[in-house]
Image (cartoon, chains in turn orange, purple):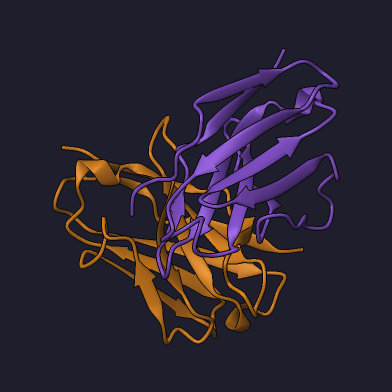
Length: 121
Length: 109
């Protein structure tokens, strides 16, 4: 059974930093692209970032480009999101998500339960 | 990276059918056959219901179907059940970024 468990959320001041983690189990982590998707309170889903299975390729939404860095440690089956220069509008539940297919990483079949990040002074 | 356009809400009675639209552009919905749909119940993580416009993952009832015409994708739910009441989001690949719709709340009357 695929399991994704996010951690690292919390309250941070504007301009601060936070690192989210997502511990994965139940599948061969290193061959699947992984993504972060966020949801502001009472709002819709927003794609944030994606990283290839090897970690060699990564892409970002314009809203976080230059501030967030996605990475992975395949030896630890863990996905990360380093968030710097945080803004109030980054306040959201952050979900990690596993793509459905190794071949076409175009949709997200498995999701964690999410971790809440609150950016406020 | 503008969000895809979905109706804010739709409703239907048990047993009826409803369709949720998702309108984008030639840069996303119209340009790729990589539209997916997600169901989200309150306080829960999203669940993949449709991928690649019209395909269903294992375990998703065939009451859920997807289609696309031009820049607009659609999710149809037939034989509405109480448990279908949830938020639904479309998502499209847009050439490295992915873009979600704003979400549609389905109410089962």
